[in-house]
Image (cartoon, rainbow, N blue to C red):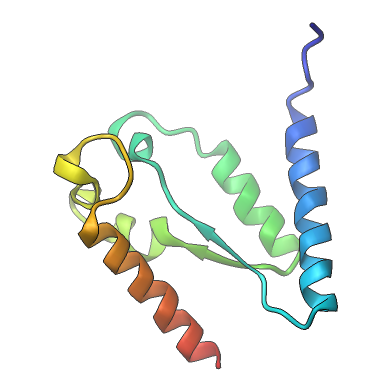
Amino acid sequence: SALIPESRPLDEFARILNLTKNLALKNNSKFYIVYLPTYARYKKNFNNKNYNYKKNISKELNIDFIDIHEKLFKKEKNPLIFFPFEFYGHYNIKGYRKISEIIYNLNINKS
């Protein structure tokens, strides 16, 4: 099988975001991207390349990017406390609660 050039998935991502943004505008809806960091981001050496690309393309397309890493995880001394027993997996109750509060409060402030 042929190798897919590295830029192709990113180009496709940008195209899909733009189509989705236009659909939201057409339907008089708000469109947000919520970046939810993974466990690996805080446990291993993290490659910021895709994160930075997604953040930058959102800005270029004028899409609100709610960065949970910046708004929550980065502020914690030990961001693994938002994962069950600090192990790999989904967020725990505390993690989901804090994330929902951030999103809720951002929405209230935009109304």
